Image 1 (cartoon, protein in one colour):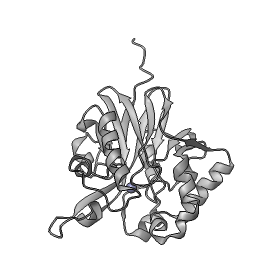
Image 2 (tube, helix red, strand yellow):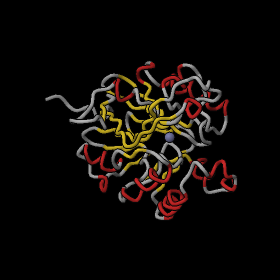
Image 3 (cartoon, helix red, strand yellow):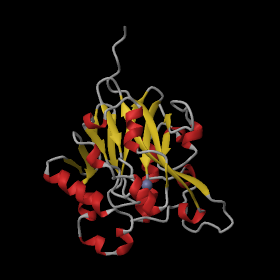
Length: 262
Ligand SMILES: [Zn+2]
């Protein structure tokens, strides 16, 4: 038997919600003639025989109902469907603090949450007096992360950092002040889980900015960083594109909810 590669991982996208989104929700300056596209909501799982890392924690059924998203199942149950006990997951990475990425954290009671220090500072600071920033967050999610911090369960990244052999986190900003992406070594090469550094394939390939943003120049530089860290455009995994469910093989029967990315 050969030794397992402990710096190499399997990667899964776990779809948990969806909606039809008009083009102007995807791109600044979209034409009214452009068709709506299906926007999917994901969390991601990176694992090998010695380690499991969950990227983002999605949102709850209650928040989906409030915000008009079609909830397919809890992303925590999606993680369970991969044979992982969420109560035992020790490493969770949060790409950024928007409502669709940092719900459900209380369902990972053993986890340390890795987040960029600038992101936590921003969403617990004065900027959220502006309604435009506040509308992208759920207060309870932020409070839960403050509690986790006081329990010693937040790990603050500042910039780029190796999380584990074969897994690194990279600050890109742009979409939010402290948005980070994850680079993972896999059997097919270096894959980048971009989360909302690019919501869709078209965003990064056609350089079409997403309407919710912190800094446009950093968003553009973030696309460069994603492309530099991925082995090819086919190694880039956007954060909300329904095409991910078509381009990768489904795990399990019925309507695809989990695909294997590598
Ligand atoms: Zn998002």
